[in-house]
Image (cartoon, rainbow, N blue to C red; front, top):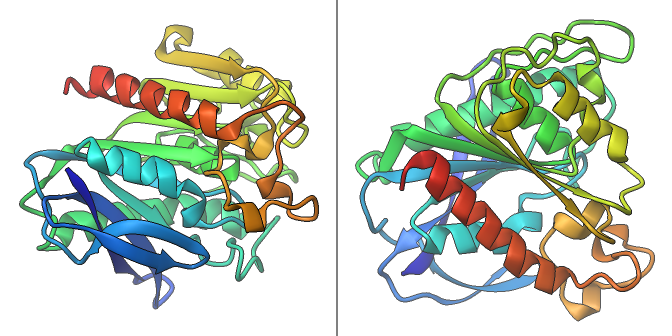
Length: 284
């Protein structure tokens, strides 16, 4: 199985605007080397989807991030038969981070994921092949917050303001990496999250330290619904796809790992852990 790719324009009627989502999916078409941003990838652009009843995965990047930060995970999952949608959160991405730190950003992010799901499921290129009952959200950092909010969690701003979000019952499982959970401080904030969760945290993460993952473990209604992996020596950015050598430099923190940590080797293990979790939870 190869990887097909296309860009999908997702309409946001509430804002009278649109944003892009990069879609990776299984295909039988022969790929070619493609340049996407600073990365070279083997992809079959705009190819036909291969397979039936493909689960849909939506990946939410962190604050000020990019969907391409999860390109290796997305291509791995596409080869396993998943359709993977990676929206770029408007106002909270590497090119435009104007909403960073605002309550509006916390409110809009979950809606971006819902709109992306709707767009994929309504698109004639995917409708015959995607299983609308098997939907998973993967999130890193603030993307993990986004995943939890869409799965039923009730967030609050730092000023004690309830953030208006709407749960999506289509979600069957979550994968959380280095999660931001500070917006779920009241004891009942996670009481309506009932889906299985696979969660990763790094021991050397200084941006989302241990108490943030512990908060999720303490407040989630069923501790047995969380499969939690603590990754020795991993930092906050260790969950992003490895960068080309030319992009690895000290003044570019996402490319850096704590001393002695091998990101490439860890990702081989992490990808397989995610695949196994999803196959188990989705009954594949």
